[in-house]
Image (tube, rainbow, N blue to C red; front, side):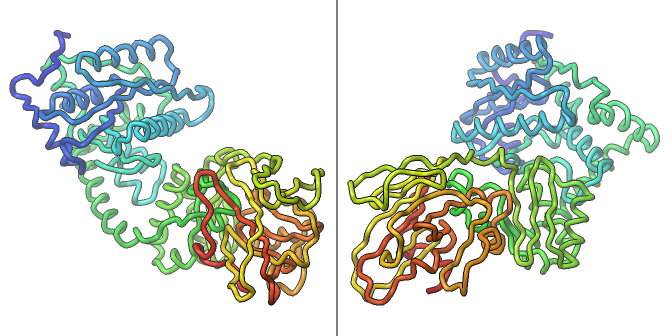
Length: 511
């Protein structure tokens, strides 16, 4: 091809970027991170942003999956040279994937977006731009149609969406593939061809090179245009449906402080069952599809979606395994979405307490049943959280603050030794106000803690008595008696998010 231009040639005003940006809801001068593969679409997108006058802050990212050997390296080197000529900073991101595992296209796409989202966060850029065009949208529509999807999925690729926690915009979404290539060729702009785009093992390539041609031959030249129009009509309908279900969203996981560090507190979520059941069935199906897709970053299969809807309609309590190792638990009052264990911060055994004030400890040393918690110090839990203990002197008439993360207890009736550990089989608990002891596992289940995370809830013992299920409820043995002026204050901290002050949270239990 002829030598490539680096400035907007005649007939291609720098203002075109402003129009494309407005189409996807961003400002012409907004910072943007462009996903640059080296293919024709992303190369055109990069040039349009670089040609813009005034030029927005623009970065490029090239994601390497390490699947095509020499060809992949040559793609990266092409992108480096291109960005150097245009004066655009480029970062090379590595997202290797196993070529022999199943669903290669989907795994590569998820890995790519995760890498792009992380880079956007590092750059403090709110949008990632991709070069998807109208033919990509048509192929996505056909693939979703053939594989089965919720109506939301039939909308195909949108000009703007949320993927892996980042806003993705597609400024070229109204252009056809041939328009992109013709525009580049007419300007003497080179691009790279990905050999895998001709590999018939991939479903998208079969749709692109075989099915769409068959449809055009059978239904005429307007077939592709009519399919795109159908997708736009579905998108319009989906917008209306979304406005009626947008209020149904995941809330933070129930009792997150009891089982998660602040770093992991947003993963998964809880949702009142009544929020879904107030919707008519078509809207309930649409909302559930969107909730599970948002929560797990993977769309549920039609079979799973229908089973969940059936259990909801019949009032059942059930557990459903979702793609990627996620789990959806239906309880009588809540839905709980739990991630695979590998997603959460690894939980290590509590480490030795740190004595900051040199106050007298409750006992000495440790044993295999837990670690001593010294008053005036804290015990790190191994995932960023810690539990502290201190004395507080208050008037006898002072109220008793009890929140999810802080309690004040009467030390008078307590054994001298405090210990911290995680749950074991056979633990029993008498919560504040409860008539007697019962298995801890039942208490945690009734509190809505998913089975997979019950082992992450820290416990504080006074002798053999369970004094506090941290983040949930204190034991009856620590009830503050009338006339008590010295109290034992226990607090659950998080290194990334300071524990709430007394009274700052809604109390989870009564006196």
